[in-house]
Length: 193
Image 1 (cartoon, one colour):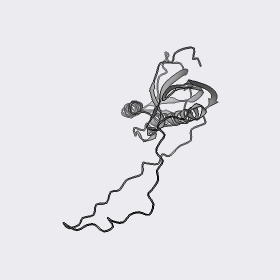
Image 2 (cartoon, helix red, strand yellow):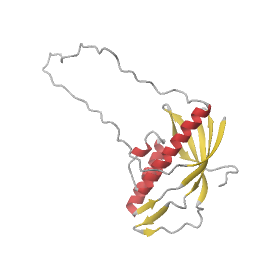
Image 3 (cartoon, helix red, strand yellow):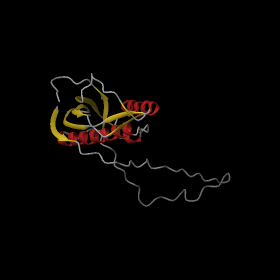
Image 4 (cartoon, helix red, strand yellow):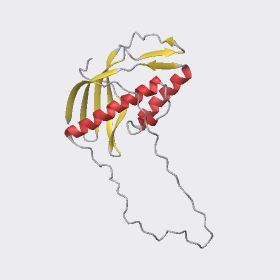
């Protein structure tokens, strides 16, 4: 089991453009019955090579670095989702599990329907990664005092039961050759921010 605690402040998130997935075009050639389309017997001179994703996660520092990278991209996507609100799941592709993506797109749809928009961004810091094989957790502190919501142009009321600074923890799972952020979990132990 590897545990790394990296005190760091997440860099300010710049507007990121996520390139849309490459479109795949399929061309169908119509030929008369009995005719073989031209070029069927042509053999390409070299087959394209694609490297298959690893079946197992990298160990130690490489796995931790990969989890930290995907965690930062997860927060970028989450902020974009809420600040838009942006109901598209595209920003979460390759970053989060399907259930986590569904949670955030549903939240964005609800915000859109209710006229809720957030501005600014949270500060995510004191991130710790714990990995055991193909599973683990990532824990950090979040200060969302600069992440402010409005509803139809009016400030959202402050929830007195929710502190502005709090710990969060998420599952991380190694699926299909990459680390993904999974569901949030209850923070256990002596994590304080």
